[in-house]
Length: 326
Image (cartoon, rainbow, N blue to C red; front, top):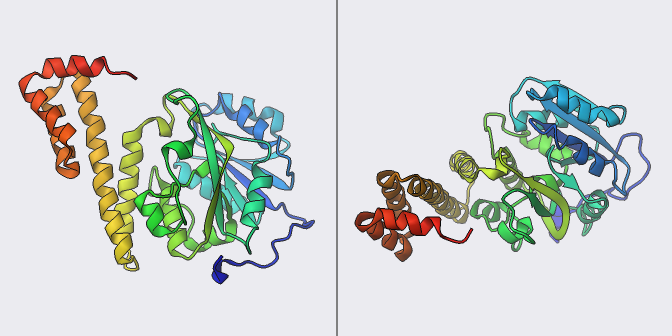
């Protein structure tokens, strides 16, 4: 544990203000918000406040019916639709806790989320941000896989690990020091997605100490229409964040090299997804262009073989792809 990671006064004690503020942005999550809040108010650790931010959601009437059982126990804020980053920033400005947690309005906590994460963040002299594993559930989720099975976290979390994708922070599983987030300037509201990824990199470059545990402490819901269900948007958001990060003058050579490699991989991944969709739709010309772009980045014999089949027998390739195991 590095000395610069140490924090004084982390022993829990009775305070007037809550120790933790749970910030919950809500946009088109009306069918799920009661289950989310049920999990919040089932926590074994109880020194917290819950802040729900209605980000101009078109399902406000249904959302507020879902909130009704908890209206006396939450701080409820409403604003025009400005995105998840702006909603979380509104919650951060209203928060009173020393620590903050960011729970998406369609995700859930296990009952020991706060107690387990507080124990970790206050261990070894204290960390600035900790996260845990999550169990994906709902549509498009392979049985038995957790988020860390799909999006790895290996070794120490620093800026290079975040940029390269060696460590992936699960936002709904985060507990962090509010003051440090205020210091680095909150979430970037100009980013419509991946604002969390951008904030984690800025915190790491600011010197924040990260840690994580592999306990499954969150349920992460995947369904049609959720941000996590559309990988192209996720990858494109990461590319925008990395392009922004590339403008920093304090990147190390290792960080810049990792950034360039990750941008290449994310752009290739986007084109692969587009190529497969075009193949299924019978748009063989567009599929070929996207596969060609991906192959120029990845130099894969499999992609070269696909390109040959696209030239010689595109219809057969399409039929074979449709028959693949899902």
